[in-house]
Structures are given as structure tokens and as C-alpha cells.
Length: 118
Image (cartoon, rainbow, N blue to C red; front, side, top):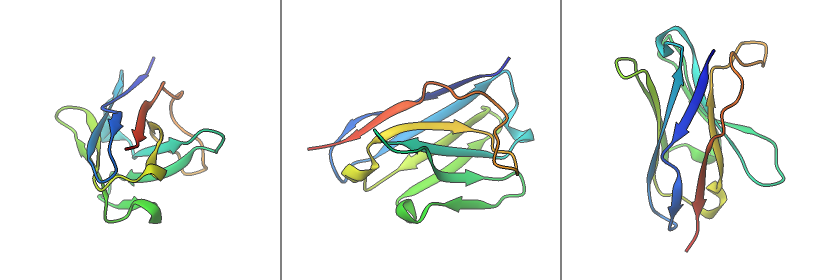
């Protein structure tokens, strides 16, 4: 059974940086497209960034130029480097492996809280 574990969140001031990590224990990420999502209080879960097995990378418009998604297959970990953080980036961040029809391979983990505030 897969257990998604996200880590690296915290409280940071506007303009600061954080690096999130995701490890799907029980699965090898090199076999999957992977993505980061976020959910702010009272809002739906939205796609932030995705990295595909063919090398394609996509970002939500709101994070382009500030966030970088990467994968380290040797460490079986997906990262999200977040720079120039803004208060509107405050959310719980999740990772998962998306399927083409809009579904996901695995149950959601607990996510990691990112709070951007002065």
C-alpha cells in the first residue's frame, strides 16, 4: 500500500523560500507522472506543478517563475522549490500521481502546511 509523505512546510515571511519533499513510500516515482497540488482554507485543491516521465514540466500561472518542480529518481523523491513566496501561497501542499482522466493513482496524504505571513 502506498503512503504519501509530504514534508518541508512551515512559516515563512513574504519573499522567503521553502523546499517541499514528497516520497510515495511503496512506489517508485520513475514509473509515474508526479505533481504538486495545494488547498487553501475554504477552497478547492488546485494543481501547482507537474513533472511527466517524458520530461515535460508544467506550472500554474500563479507560480511560474517562482516555483520549480523536480524529481530525484535515485532518492525516489519529488521536490517543489518555492521562492519569492507570497501570502496567497498559504495552503496545505500535497503531492500525487495524476492519471490522464483526472483521477489519481493513490489516496491523498496529509500534506504539508505552508504559511506565508509577516
